[in-house]
Image 1 (cartoon, rainbow, N blue to C red):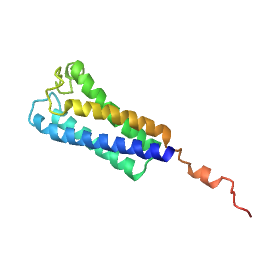
Image 2: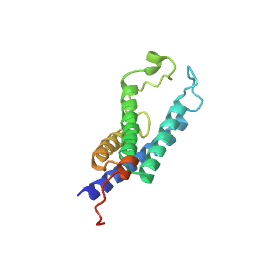
Image 3: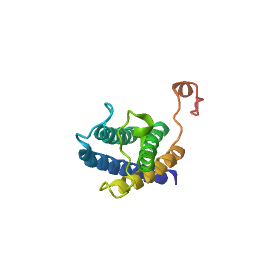
Image 4: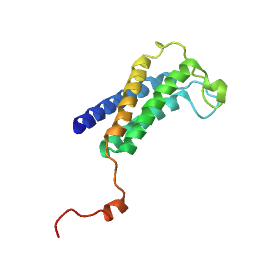
Length: 151
């Protein structure tokens, strides 16, 4: 059961990360040239989120362990939180260095709801993956383990 669960959860996380990358790179073009109170722009935030999703996906494919699954969960849940937070509050007013991106309309960006759902589903699947994947042994544990082979 564990290998099936592991691969199923991994596929769900990778699919959600692909959706996240597509949505953020696609929607980033809407924010080119908009004013910002600092060097942090709406365009830059969207590209950064897309790049984080790429890094998380590649890391999960290259080395699927609890650390990479946790990183993927952090990226996905953090992205979903950002969508919700910007829908409810204006971080630009709260922090000053962030752009004013408050958006009370869930249908304003073409793929906003798709991104939010994919990030939630992918985040929950990544958290599940953290619990399904085995613990990695440290070098010290590998060196000091007892051999089960006959002498």
